[in-house]
Length: 441
Figure 1: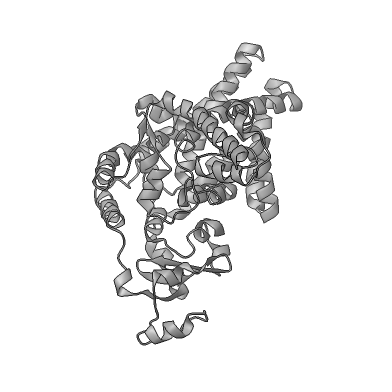
Figure 2: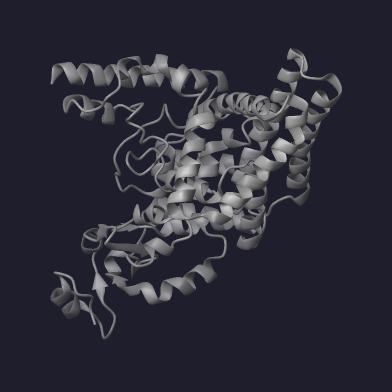
């Protein structure tokens, strides 16, 4: 029997037996949190009641309400047969046969993904990730040794902070691997390792990271759906949103000068202030007490290790935030160079490949830059294949470029230093667009 919708009678007449058939246009009407349908491989699912239970957060799935999520589904999940068990009771019908086909670029992308699976590009190197974890621990041990044997003079103090910040930055890239399920074949093993690194080694939260980061991957550079570019209380990015906000005289900041105050409110404060406050807010609001315990254990460990060496609780408190201050600069320049200068828009409901390439670009690759960026200089390959182990991105890149060239999709590769500069230049340009739209409207 057809669902109770305004088009129910029409759908029942079009149904074959108990199978109800829909058009893409009809599915597109169900795109709100209280009424959300998605399309997967030509089948229609009512995910309204599943949204709160979705492991990646309700918004990740909700962002695809009324849309075809086939390629996103294939890209995010490593055990698809297991996930399909949860999909069965949500199934409400199929698309009309004439509307089931994906676009040519989406079909070819899924074929390329299958080819990469056959070539074992989704098989992680145990040696790579073991060495990576050990080198993170080594940085923390080195910081402790420096303070233990050279005291808290300015030189050892700064050296220890740099060593710790380096270890924390690298731990951030490693937790990112586990969070994307790209290290172990079993999801539960990745989740456990994610807790150990993200919370045990960094004192952050897996729950908070999942909620934020998977939205970014689901809809990169989509305003109001990607939290990384939906920050209008501080910055406006891209060309389209600043113009719209300027014409409507919205906003509270002097956006024309955002490329200047970025140096005060961006890299220095993101991790030390904003992320810390946001993590506490998310955990308390959502009752994530397991994450709270993990984080408290991290801070207890940090205090026991470094407070005796830095001069007690408050001195260690300052030392901790100085270390986060250094890490924050590293994190911001790396992560924003791949996205902020790219196009930012409202949801255009375009295909997976087109959407990822429109909001993502690569930067220089070398042994140093791969290490420094956690291989996120291969941002395009990471966004297209989020569960692929990062040490294989460079192997996938040539054929991704071929696919893009075939369909006329821009594959942007930038010099790293130029990409860093583009962050500031793009903020300046966005601010000017806002300013002129505001005063000309």
